[in-house]
Image (cartoon, rainbow, N blue to C red):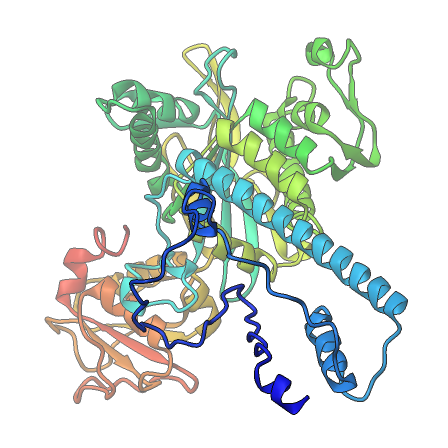
Length: 548
């Protein structure tokens, strides 16, 4: 028996890839005497006959006899890998594991779907905002005070400490005189002291339009557009605004930094996009002349607090036949404040539907010379200004009733009470009411002394300074000096009131000093921050640089 065992054929080793070794090493020489008995039917022949050029010689026998340890190892290898689970020391039931996996898969799919919606929505609004920016935010305006950190060297003169925006309402396409500025209003913002004012400019104010003679001020913008040689509508609009600024700024005495033009369609769409605005109507407005635009109802708005939608708000702001142009301006200011309150209220700028509607209306019917970053900064400022800090101003309410009505060449006009084209009272009132933010904040006390023999020089200069909102506390002659050539400004704050010092240096074109010059005999009252000692050079500039 043992001899027979010696001659038993040894078991061939099993290979898991189907190849079986004959005992020779890889690369061993095959004896020439080896030939398949029937090449055509041999496994090698079948091997070549296969379309893929490869076929295993035989399937490896599967050894199903495993030790318990091997069986456990195979079961672990075949078990699905579950990321994020703590497997050590736990024994899961298959059914509960499957439920947990399905819940995780559903949660993952829901998260991916939500993420996709956010990405798609962001892309949509990004594209819409980009398109709207190109059409709506043309850039070109500029207010140094709009910056979060104001560069004092950018402040060219008194008034640059505020942000002054000229709001214009026009009829637009389909209306008679589509470019006539039916509404003119200045929104002046004080970003330092967190307040704002709305000042109405009567559209019938009789003025001299440079290069176009004497007309109502509402013709300045269309005149400028008509004369423009620009090839684009945007360029023509800028030229129209430039002529309007040149006409208006000498009257109001403050710079205009930005412009917004809104036509009737944009106004209605914007109010509707906000879901209406809340307005407190002081008295019932009855106007049969525009009843045809109100479903033949002559009652535009009844007395009391109410919500107005686009069409009604527009009629309320436009009507003047049964009241006056001044009363209409008051209504317009009330609607603007109502729009501000709604637009900045909680939820408006976080509601994608409202944002989309606003962009649609603004993009087609509004022109501004803001940049997109300007608008973001303005929103930050407005969020700090409560509605009770927005003052409504006009030029007809006592004690500042500075305008009156009249007629010119058969036209009903508005003119200054001081006399035709005499806007001095108007200029002084606006400059003092809309004080430069930095002048108002520092509120420096200024003493003005005349060190020349020119009579009235100190009083004239003081009046000009007062018109810009400076606090002039002393006006007098220098005791000992009567023929000083050059003006001197003494800064007794030693640089503390740097904005006032900057404005005075710009105005008088000199550098301040921190000590009184000898021999003047001047002893400034206690509490004085700046002493201005006027020389003969001030007489030459008092009617030019000081008055501008």
